[in-house]
Length: 272
Image 1 (cartoon, helix red, strand yellow):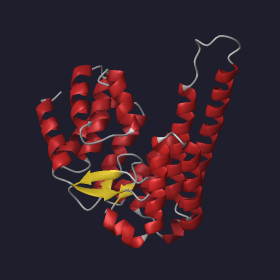
Image 2 (cartoon, one colour; image 1 turned 45 degrees about the vertical axis):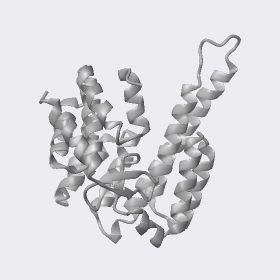
Image 3 (cartoon, rainbow, N blue to C red; image 1 turned 30 degrees about the vertical axis):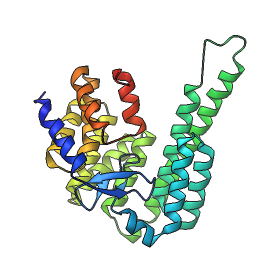
């Protein structure tokens, strides 16, 4: 591994010398030195400031605030209802994808409630297991709806953002062949940033740790989406059992980012 100091310095520069962009799909605040970014939570394309979103769609901003408040209380049902309303009003497949991520988080939460140390017949465990399966099935349904909607709108123009969102949905579905096709198509669009980021996601999902590590390193050095790339870099180091280096990167990153993936990796590394 290269000298980790280089990555720590890059993380600090990205965290300290950046403006804030708001994701219109999940409401996350993203640090970026540019007028765009990849969202730290849902990984969709971001290009709005708070003021821009307030001026363009104030009701959307209110809905995102409601979702954020609900998720803080693990009130997944309220967050899901808010997303249902947002999609009905705007018909944007990005909201289907973001809602699917809520269902996945909800499913994982139900799984976390299973406790084999309980006495008796463990009826509660069975209920949590069935709820987890049901919620994951709903997440997959929404992801498939997002892919269908994106493909149905192909006549409106084959844009990098559509390809990228289709790619993300297919990765979450585990449809890696379709994801690879859309990943390759991004290169034809000459969208270097989206293509590089998608590659990092794809190779990580496909367990090609060395390739994902290489691409995350390149993205950190590029100065774009540094914080996201640093998470993937730390995750790859964890997979390669370089736990000390992974913990060092992640500890620095947590000063500027906070999401479920980072917290889960931090727990595995024993730093929280």
